[in-house]
Length: 75
Image (cartoon, rainbow, N blue to C red):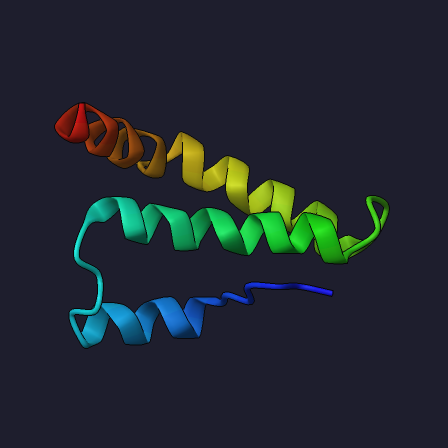
């Protein structure tokens, strides 16, 4: 059972409605999507593998830089 569900539609809606008060909140929701994916899906499933691929792409292409900037601003 996923205790705290999150999806890209919800994140987009929160962005459009200025519901994030910090970049850290945005990062938390992005990471929650992947955490839920890995919790809910079997490690050999296509959903789990697709989650790993998407997370890897995001981390290589910008999100890693964004998350680094967030950490730097808050410390």
